[in-house]
Length: 300
Image 1 (cartoon, rainbow, N blue to C red):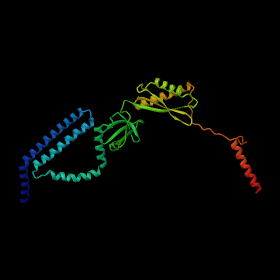
Image 2: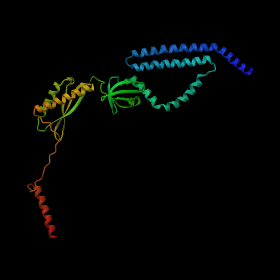
Image 3: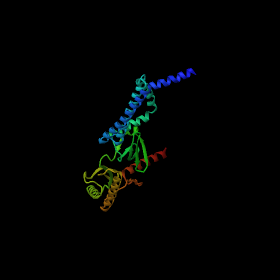
Image 4: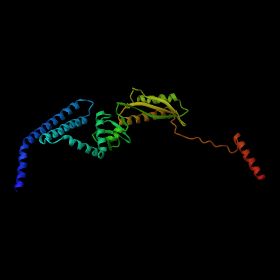
């Protein structure tokens, strides 16, 4: 019992002696905690003022700054309370542990850092219409882990930021307008300039076709069944608008060419049958050769 009481007394005595250090350590940690919150808000406010930094990235930077000060406060408080504590030993152990964690969470960390780079570099914004691999739609959200798209079919595609950052991304709404093209074919017997002017007249009258840059109608191919025009025009870059204007332009061109008496031929094949009576020189020679060969075979 004496040994037990002595042990309890020793612990109590040691605690009482360390009590001022514990109080000071707690106060130091609370001061660091308050400083961390203030620093996080300041960093967030400064980052928000910059037009080059996304709001989500500004919030992340504020949290990172706050977390760094909080961890530093824990180390300082631990040194105050436990003078024998050496932060370098803990950091060394964490370094070894971080290697194993890095291998285990490689994809998670890749998406995390890719998300930071996307929010920082801002290759596209929320509301842009983009295409990544086989996915295409409107950007709904960009967070640290993934990018969310609302496809044109009304579905949600969640793309890992690592795949987005390392893939080719087509931003369809990066600019206010974009060029549209399609092929229109007319018959070989029709006048090319008449067909060109008919198409240009329709484009000039189609609502949604921008006057600057103006539409272009070029002869791009002498196809087997038609003379093909490549029609170029510019329209506002939203996908719904592109589909609407393209439909109006193509419909108007079809009706205008019909009204102008210009043929829009479909692919066809011409088959020539040789005259079996041998009215052509080549057929006469072929029949003579076959008859001669047949007669020689009978004599044999």
